[in-house]
Image 1: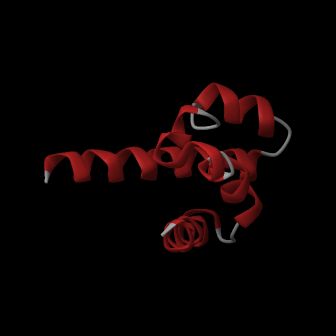
Image 2: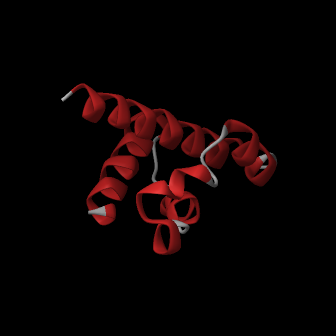
Length: 80
């Protein structure tokens, strides 16, 4: 399931940023292995990704897009 979501994140990267950043999405979602669905408690805040990617504006943008997409997906699931 996570692999399918990463495909969506990479597509969003391509559409908005012109290239993919799979390393960003792997880093952000790595806590899934031990936290499962609660993995978004870690590495999914703007402050955390700003600290991690402050020297790389494209990776920072990719990480922020990841957060926005995840939040939109969560809201959509809660409505159904």
